[in-house]
Image (tube, rainbow, N blue to C red):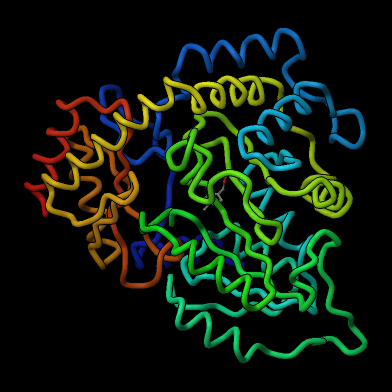
Length: 383
Ligand SMILES: *Cc1c(COP(=O)(O)O)cnc(C)c1O
């Protein structure tokens, strides 16, 4: 393998990636810290107190000696919030998707996956070895067409289509996977239609709410709301609106027991550090309460300012997708903005489809009016 040649090739395609440290005083418009909780004093205090009491690291995977009452309490609080029987923590959203999907699906399962689903979902599908059928982004007509004529299992001779025990539905071994708020487009999945289709075709619906929890739904529970039905599995992360790190899956008690036994990314990885869980607990308390309501109000107000001033016709979420097309041009625009202290990372293939490179802009509750107008002025200048 010629590393140098490969890297050069990436450079020629405008696809070369490198790490950056933002210069001081730069306005960050691409973080997923939507409610600015990563710097909230109570969230920081939560991390500090948990570290003092439980230490800097958990020392082992949870099934060995890495379990403690902090984790159990956070899971209990998540379940109360979502009004589900059980919740299970994962080390990150990536861990959750590459752990849960292969636990639910095997060679004899069919997965229907939105074409714009996150890389961690794609990797989860690949690891599962399931037959994965891609439907056009948010296209329910296309999904139903595919559901009507699914490839017929068993795909492996002698195989037996399987699904987890709690899912009375889904006996046919069909899994539909979508993001709730699409991370790179900023648009919303038609969850009501997806629920209906899942019901109609006896499928299990897996919804990744990474960019929805904290911001959508009553008490910030996400777009699926509280107490989702039995054939829906919901995943959320702590790394975005919670301002912390980690992830969780919510569902039935038996599902939790099943995942503890089957999800390899859960079984074979050191559990979350106490600091992350202390921070997440504090963030959850804020998100559920009055302060969370206020933060969401500020967030949506900022979102509508940007949407209106830039005439974008988006604003369903705090993620705006400004399509440029060419990868090199996109990166040049990002560099140019950075000179004016506006940081918006350019997004290129393979994160997004070829020819759809873009500036992915995010707004937070704590952006000031001055910062927003500085952004707007500079974007208008270059676009
Ligand atoms: C960010 C993201 C993930 C990964 O979550 P991490 O906690 O950052 O690993 C998974 N799914 C979606 C849709 C995401 O946007």
